Amino acid sequence: TRAGVVLGPEERLSVTDALRGVTANAAYQYFEEDRKGTIRAGKRADLVVLDRNPLDVPAEELKNLRVLATIKAGEPLYRKE
Image (cartoon, rainbow, N blue to C red; front, side, top):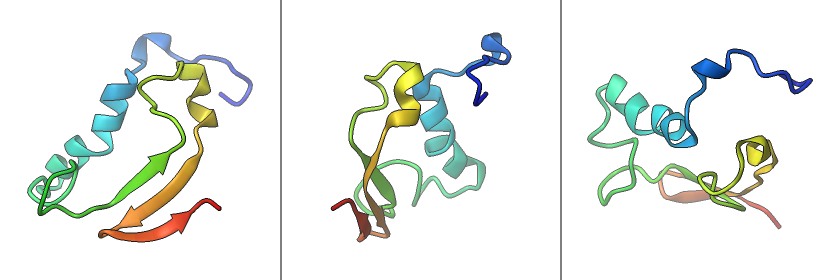
């Protein structure tokens, strides 16, 4: 929570599982895995560039990650100055 209270710690996902849930697994759920969800030639290039690798930071620091750039369909939409 905003107050730092952990609700249902036994229900937590790993960062890897959470990222997979909003990328590859979400695309699969909508039958779009042939064009979305993972980075591969021929798929849509919708992604964000972060200042650090979310797999390498402690869970409590995930909220501090900063978006450096966003790309949609291969076109840059935002770039931090």
